[in-house]
Image (cartoon, rainbow, N blue to C red; front, side, top):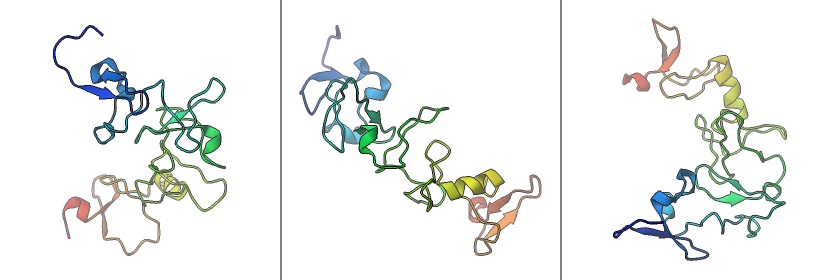
Length: 167
């Protein structure tokens, strides 16, 4: 690049090549906690088998940690393609249901992650029914009498009292 002056570089952990952050595509830039372990696009490798990208074996990159994986190294039943709408893919280390905190998509062998890897199968069903607090997006069961909730007089939705700062 033709940049002049003293601009900080990031270095690839494999080839030690220096890069300006502004010369990298946005999805290639290291996250703040990855500056020492960052890998350039030429040196990306699968975090399961350790092999690099090959013409026949495409690498998937996690949208959260930016680690890469071969689809065949992920194991059975784990999604091997990004979501259709937002093109999001989250690895097994980073995926977590934003409602219940589960790190697995469900109990059934065919359970899948929903809403761009943000909801497990059970929470996605509750969300589709409208059983979620519109303020925090946490899902609830029809027979959940333990949670302190109240019904909004305007929209008739159920809301956690703590989300409305009421105890």
